[in-house]
Length: 445
Image (cartoon, rainbow, N blue to C red):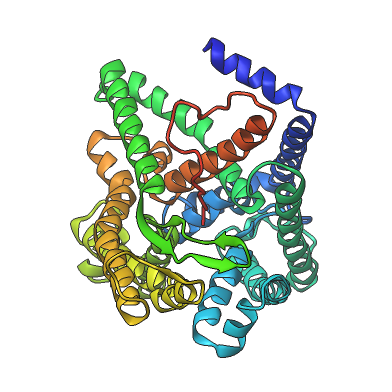
């Protein structure tokens, strides 16, 4: 503890790091403040129906990413998810469309063009998503609309406000990346997730010590121990890499020798990040949409797929996660391109022929990594459902696994690594000097 306090003092001594930390805290505070600013014309005291609707499914995922702004009908209700959706679409286009493939290989100029297209696509998504959100608000909490305001007059300015709110969040995230600490977009998602932790923790403690079958302090300690081991397993999952050795040939230019060094390609066990879970959760929301139109005539299969603690739901959920892990890993990592780049730079894997054999070798390694990685991700994803056997409250169960836990672990490690680099530049001991996370990069999405 004494060394930890000393490290915090060192963080404050470094002027550049101190400014970055203060800017990060300021911008995240602005984001949290905006999450409670309700849309003009909405009565916040009459939003109980919308808030009860966001207890599960995709609505719960959106509300979690927005830090409760979705159920509060705030100006930041749509959060950063439209930008993430646009980024995913651009990644898919960069794989399938030659125009975007060429743009991706243009370096910095190509990256700027892709960012511009991503913003335009984000606005296009917001133009459709904002009215859809408002229509859902009208259906689920029509009484929340202030009396005397017509729906036609309300929807146009509300759409503009919601779209502007999401773009402002994007601007905040970029400013955190440039002038703060960590990845700004990931930081905003993490803040939205962790904002629910204190309330969920209090509810869980209250239920354990007040309910007749709560189990008392013993069950609560068991919960904390399980949470500790799940977090440790998530850290191993995020940090796990397979280092593929690459030898570069020696080249003589005049009297100087270049190359000849051995380097490594770090192939991550968790290459797909949290995207497979997000895709799978989005598809698992389809049965809920079907039931909304079938009323009480839904079959037992649909009803089972609506219950996140049923056997059928979890089997389908795990299958989708494994399938999307392979799919997303295939579109983000191109063994053929890696082999060509290696050959172009006079590099080769010892014992493997350059070209096609190298691509097949890398593809084989990625397949062997993806199989256990996808199963590990699936296990982490179903942990909130498994905690139901221990009667854990639903709000607190979200932190035992799934998207929220993986994002929290990834963003915290990434932020600590950036703080560590600033301290090491000034010859101070960092926060991770006793761990093995140094020199590894982590992306939250």
